[in-house]
Image 1 (cartoon, rainbow, N blue to C red):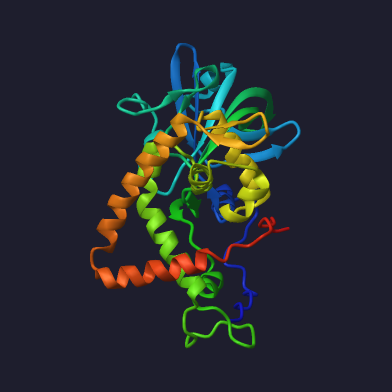
Image 2: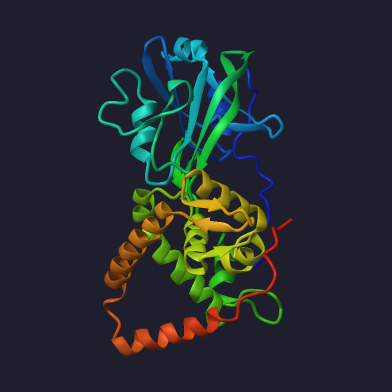
Length: 333
């Protein structure tokens, strides 16, 4: 599959000073995520939808977003010492619309937790970054708010996207999606006539069931599939070292380290005197509850299949699962 040749015609151009509206439309061709930035200041809560979010630095951990000086919330954000950037998920369009409006109590009827400096942190987001204000930079009709990240949470969810003045969803690039489900021929090109590979079918099945279970995962409190997988592995093994967990969890070493420490901070895991990871009573209770909910969801999704079909499928999956790699999954450069 070859990429289409770029057009030689300019669909729109102009002098920035003479056509600010057209210039703004041109900027809108850059796809971004969607955030709701929140703070507590002057005795009230403030929040606004923004897509001007960006990472600035890893050391120190700095992020930025910008606010129009004419915004009703400007003075509150200017005086607040902390703010939270809530990155919205694909199913949170209602929150994007709510916080894009002016006036009214935007937090009325919403669930949220108190973050650093009192900034509201919204639930079920793709990520939330709690920040103290690091620097404010005057920039034309906006002020750039730079924050030092104090803590964050992240979840394995699809993000909400903003492009050309409207909300959108992120999808896999067509060629990559076809390669996942169909494999490649001898030429390396995807052929529509090629039969699907077992790996592609397994991935699609996993992604489908995982998506159905996402709401339950949110309710139970773990922020990613990796954390649930690692916790279940340690529950089965009794105790384990990272070297043992890495090949069985099928995640990168960095992903494993992040999952382990997040589970430890949540009280689900502890480290023994021998350096091995141990599951806590809270962790065991979580695994038991998640397993119970997973069984119920699987039953509803698999009810169309006969007992013999399911038995054969499980036998194949157990056989494939027995051939685990002996080395950790490496991060992609």
